[in-house]
Amino acid sequence: MLVYPYYVFFQVGAFLVGLFCYSKVKYTHYKYFIPFLLFIACYEIGSLYDLFAIDHKNLWITNIVMTISFLFYGFFLLNIIKTPVFKKWIKGGILLSIFCTLTDVFLIQGFWNLATFAILLQLGVLIMTTCLYFYELLNYTQETLRIVRLAPFWLNTGLLFYCLLYFLFFSVFTYMAYSRSHEYWLLCDIVPNIANILLYSFLMITFLCCRKTTSPIRTMQ
Image (cartoon, rainbow, N blue to C red; front, side, top):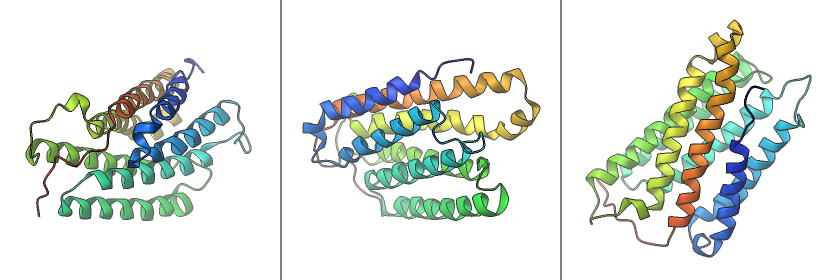
């Protein structure tokens, strides 16, 4: 390992900030982030100590955790999106991703290998979803907003950066993994750090900005 996974501290930090802000988030859907972040932190810490390794491989647990994360963020953002036609697109993307994930894991790349095809599709669906949120925010808001105080804005921004970085990384993952180049090992250390630090830093801001309000976005039929 060339670079220590400092992002674990940010994951734990986001969990602690969520607990600190629990009085604000307990009446919102953001309360579900607290057990989710605890689950993610346990997975990351366990992976650091090879607690999930079977025959010196832990890619199987990575497939499971990334799929769970995809479903969590996908359905969470589905509640934020208000436009019915956008909701249909997102639901279709989620269902397609699950079908392709099962196909990839059990029929193509195998359970013990990293399901890069499925992961790319999952990341693509999340990128599309965050873009639909920003499109709604720009075109269908009913009032002037101070986005620096808007919790969904920070969540979607952090998730967009995270997904874009990982999408670019997994796009060349198979080629670089077989090449065993120095650049491959460097990217394996740097990309997770940057992507996760961005995501969980923005998630901390999300918790701090969280408040129970009505949606400022009107729907487009």
